Image (tube, rainbow, N blue to C red; front, top):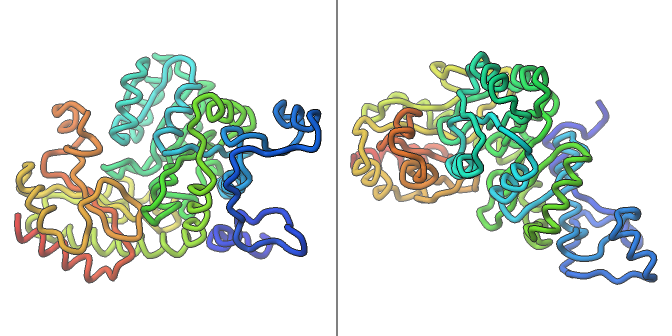
Length: 388
């Protein structure tokens, strides 16, 4: 390994661009221009045709967004990365290029599941049941297996290596939403994943001030994704990309704090008399803890979810209303702690019976643990639980 190859260094040093004048800017420049002039018509024509590197129009690419895409591809170990205006725009773009049936994780993010249901030709499975995954791929003849590395909000962990082996045996691609892990914790491609999807809005940006999404994969997939940005107009603008690059520089530091504090919060909630159950891959009782230990090198993410003993919406509402430090907000991965109620937010579109079957009950709460002092986070949660 050469000097500077560790992930904590790479996220700081990434997205540096070609020399400008006498040196390389340590912060990539923000290029806001929508259009780009060329010396000759022939030069412009070759750029449009993809025969020459360059920029012609904002939907086709910009230098600043291109710097972010190159950084993400390098961090993920893929040939390309394509950035979109949101995580859902990235997911929709990828799914739009998938012909035929899809096998997908049953407890995925609510909006993702809604898109898959609207698309049709989807079989939902428990991805920790490898026999069920194999049977679903056999029955459907699907060419895509879609999972989340850490599921939102139940925090199940999938075995990427095993799922890649199963998918490839069926000539299917393994696509992984890695938003909750980020490149700081895990590189899915190193264990056989074919496609990596991120909501850049979350941990990679990490500051709650910009939205974005990315699809990382092969050169052919990158060409398909670029076509989507050109025709759908969902390409990430340069200022948004510049903010994501700025946020990404501290990803390693932030994830270390998020993970350490989440373990403290999860352990505390597991002992609280008003909490019925806690979901966190770092707890001894989590069904995939051993897998998480090996796959994530001893760090388990910054998300914690739990079910109140009083398993009803009113109890969850009282808990949320009593929070003082944490924000009651329907997002995750920011610097600050955020708490939300999946049954009325992220998974609102899912039928109540299906939510209950999965374990997303009326008293179920999700916490994105921030970088505040963990003692203050715990104190705020205790104060809110006293109102339940």
